[in-house]
Length: 364
Image (cartoon, rainbow, N blue to C red):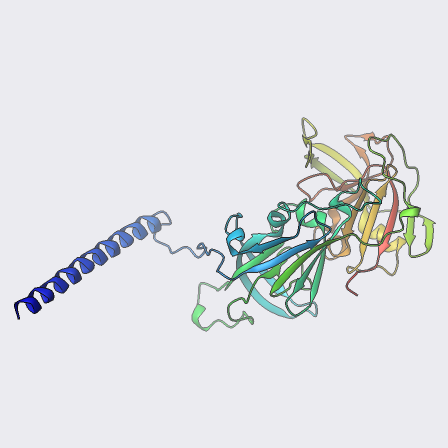
């Protein structure tokens, strides 16, 4: 009897200690939460941190030096973002607005070493495609440059958390968001695009690949080669023709802050660029082109960059592409230069533009 009484006292004592520890933790948690919320004037913030859940996995392969299997623990090492989207189907149906937590694709690709072709060892990834594949076999295609060199205000993102963006009034009865439920795997989102044509659910593979291009019709790659282009050759399948400039629309970009990915800041002050809008010229030169196509633009020194039709035609900022004639009032010694003013880096700018190739969308 005495032993049973002592055992009961021990359990009661242990339960008391656990209860006190729990109360202390709750008090500390409440105090910490209170101090945290005080920083926001008493409001509860909607943007909370959601780490990648266990079980996420996708493969990065193709034209890479080493295949990379990205898992949840790898994603936890990368800087996440929280991005709001306004989602409209390609047919024009409004699906709602959502806030996603995930990792920008540019952070993933920064850890991948692309492998150029043996026949063209000077190629860099700027003429490569990045193809995302879902578990169901669906695909979405981008250029390497639009994922890595573009600005990061609204990055293409692999998301693991989705939350509906709700109004402040009557949130409980709001029915504006048609997509419900948690994400299954990683969802590819493209927040800056006008529709969800390139969104993709349950991504399991990211592949770098080089598209088929008419290399025999393009200038060879010659580093530090001084040249000047006085015309642009348009190439479409087997056909080649000289581009007709006609009455091209002109625009001035007032403050061009040039930063190179490899060499850093390229000017002591922002410059003013003057040139021709690219999008209407492409529509004139390639009447059958669409947002699903891709365009390879080459300089007379062989420097080549790949662009997607969606970023030129289906992006509200498509007018950021100019064929530049003058910078700070001075003509360019190489001839027309492709200027991409919406990018953070200038590496997709092409000096002495000499050839433009239309490549039909690889996913057609």
